[in-house]
Image (tube, rainbow, N blue to C red; front, side, top):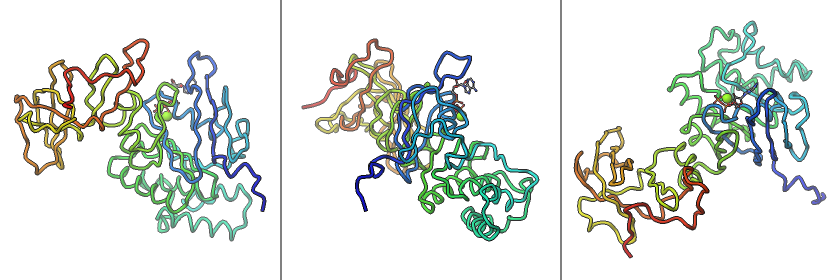
Amino acid sequence: MSHSDSNSSSPGIRIAGVSKVYSGTSRAAVDDVSLDIADGEFITLLGPSGSGKTTMLSMLAGFVSVSAGTIEIDGRDVSRQKPHKRNLGVVFQQYALFPHMTVRKNIAFPLQQRKMTKAQIAAKVGEALKLVHLEEYADRLPSQLSGGQQQRVALARAVVYHPRALLMDEPLGALDRKLRDELQREIARMHRELGMTFIFVTHDQHEALTLSDRIAVFNEGRVEQVGTPSELYERPKTLFVAQFLGESTCFRGDGGVTVVRPERLDLHTDAASVPDGHNRVRATVTDIVYVGNHHQVGLRFADGTTGSAMRVAGRSLPAVPGEEVTVSWDPEHQSIVADPADDPPPSESAATPPLGATARA
Ligand SMILES: Nc1ncnc2c1ncn2[C@@H]1O[C@H](COP(=O)(O)OP(=O)(O)OP(=O)(O)O)[C@@H](O)[C@H]1O
Ligand SMILES: [Mg+2]
């Protein structure tokens, strides 16, 4: 066997400098996006409404043409290939099942298009029904199923022919919270069992954090940051990423914005208890909200900055609303990002501690 093939080092799916400008518009809906997706990876495109997620997924699937750049699958440029030639499974928010066909016939449809034998089709449909736990519903029509069950059928139909990757655009968007959580776990299980590349679109940060190996955060057509859920949460590179994924207290300073997550902030009634080397700022407790497993402590700092700290329920609270406290944190756990309000943006090395913060040597 030869080791000269370059495919062994090339990623499964490569998006290289891809842009989309829809005809009749001047602003790019997707703007110079590059992203390598590894084989078997669960990657999520996360971003607010209008940030270009669906456009990016549609270009991958081949439903929308690229204006610039290339899309490669296994080293092959597919940018100009028809959708069915790309061998990708696709699931959208709307179930898009054939209403006059039973569950079994819906799932069999892509196999019939691929001209498989009856025996092959029966075996593969059986496997797919089992995968989504719908064996008992095989002979029902879509109208006789719940929304969650219909979406399971759509998932089964999208993977039944073992596509190269499964593309999903807000597949749980139409479901209520409980069903959403349930299907999230189902999708995670399907990913483990199939070992297939999953490319998932959502604007729900919790969904993205729960499901993904990596997340690409979209903002105005560009990818702001790509990383594992913990990289994005612990080490956001921009204010947008910090604020889009979770809560944080943002101290604006001359050198940029210092971002601290609520679970990293400690509260002290006695400033002497602040550990050496930790940053400290005085604040007033504005409110304390009990959220079941923790308390959320609202804070107002001297410069007007508001923020929050988190305290695990069951541990005593060090203060009551209206009281002044010293807020401290380990500088190891802060992120310093450029302030979009500054022009030009400062470099990270120029960053100074936040207003009023001092570290004890
Ligand atoms: N067919 C089209 N023609 C012109 N502009 C379009 C077209 N489709 C989308 N756009 C524009 O492209 C931008 C990105 O849209 P896109 O649907 O990709 O966003 P999205 O991130 O999927 O948003 P959402 O979360 O609301 O689904 C938006 O400004 C949108 O108005
Ligand atoms: Mg969309």
